[in-house]
Image (tube, rainbow, N blue to C red; front, side, top):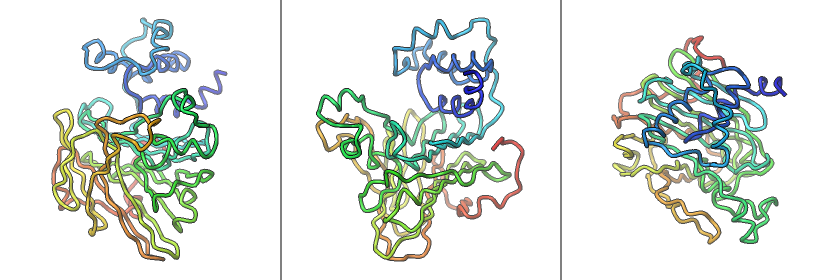
Length: 353
C-alpha cells in the first residue's frame, strides 16, 4: 500500500492544491509520505479559516479526521521545491505556477484524459487559472448523484449522464464544435510539457475528442515570466464548415471593452482577457447561471466569456490564441508566440518535467 502511494505521490498532492478550503486528506498524504511540504497550501488555508477568511472543506464528513491525521509536532511546512509538474495515467494533468510564496503569483493547470473514465466529466482540455489570489478561470464542479437519481436520471449510462449540464462539455472551458459533445471514448494525452528560459507550458493532443468534427486538435497553456497565461488551440477542419465556440468559465464581473478585449474584476483585482488570434472575432457573454433543465444545479454568479468562429471546409491550420494578463495591462507589444514555437528557448533545470 505504501509503495502505491509513493508511486502516485505527484498526482495526489498536486491535485489537492486545486481544491479550496481545508482538506484533511492532505494531512493523511503528508503523514503517510513523511513530506511536510505537501501541507504548504493547507497551512495557508487553515490560517485563513482561523482568520474567518475561508470556509471549511466542502466535504465536511472528513473534517473531524483533521484531529487524527494532523501531527502537531510537525514544524511549519516547507515550501515545495518545484513550480511545474505533469502527471500521466487515465487523466493526465499539468500544473505551472510562478511562485509558492508570492500572494500575487500566477497559476495555470490543464487536464487531458477521457469522458469514459469513471466519474469523469466531458471536460478534456479544461483549464483553471489564478493570479493575485483570485481564481479567474474556474470549474463549476460536480452535482450530487443522489439529486440526479431522484430526478429519474440514469447517470451511470451513456445517455442520461451527458444531459446533466455540469457533466457535459457546454459547461466547461473547452472547445465546442457545432454544439456537439466530445467523443466519449476519445482520449487526450499530454504530448509536450516543459519549463524553459522563456516560459513554462503543457500541450495536449485532443484530436480523438473531436473525431468526425475536426481533422486534428491540440490545446496548450503557457505561463509567461510576467505572470500572463496563454491558452492556444491549434486545429484543422474536415471537408465541412465548422462552428467553433471558445469560452472560459468565470465568476468575475466582465466588461467587454472591444471586439477582442475584456476586463475581468473580482475581489478588488483586475485581469485583462485579449484574443490575439484570430482577429475577426467578437467577444460575448454566454449565460450559464441557470442551466436548461430543472434537475440541473444553478450556478449563481457564473458566466462564460468567449466567442464563436465559423471555419471553412478544409481550412488551413487555425490558431486560437487567448491571453490572460494579471493587473489588466494592454497586451499590445508583448510577445505571445505560437504554440509551435514554445519549445524554441534554452531549457531551464527548474522543472522536474
